[in-house]
Length: 222
Image (cartoon, rainbow, N blue to C red; front, side):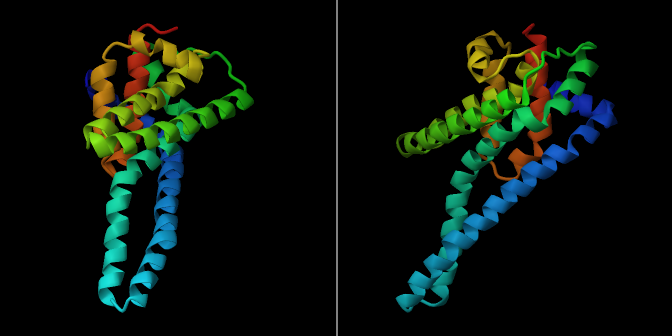
């Protein structure tokens, strides 16, 4: 939690950090909302028509909406993580680098090709979807705790991705370095809790990116 507290403090002291937030936040929020509304129009009308066929009228309409909202509440965390996995190393590097400069006065800059970065983002998204499905299945046996632990691990990867990428460490190398991060368990747990709460997860995005960057930097990862 100390890295998250430090991230909040940096944002409070250095207003220029917010200039690095708008673009990635706009993309994340827009894609998140697009998927939300697309899912609504793909799922709810067919359910409503099915119930109308049974002569249930307004009850069928209400049930379709409620069923979607309940399903989205449980699925939105996985969708959010998939978006973050794809966008983290592509759009959040500016904020992450500025945070590291303010915190330490130095920012590593090992160049990674655009092709490698895109491939890395696709690998992260695939891993997130697979683990998200595992989390949903585990959640049937161990409600809340199972999905939370899966979200915690994925979030730990995602929110430290920009800092690791600047050090030339993409997904495979990053995973082997996670054990060196000081405070990784408490950070991952906090991320897991935030991730499964719709809207809060989007609002917390820049702070979690900043906190993940600070954790990598403070742990002496080179």
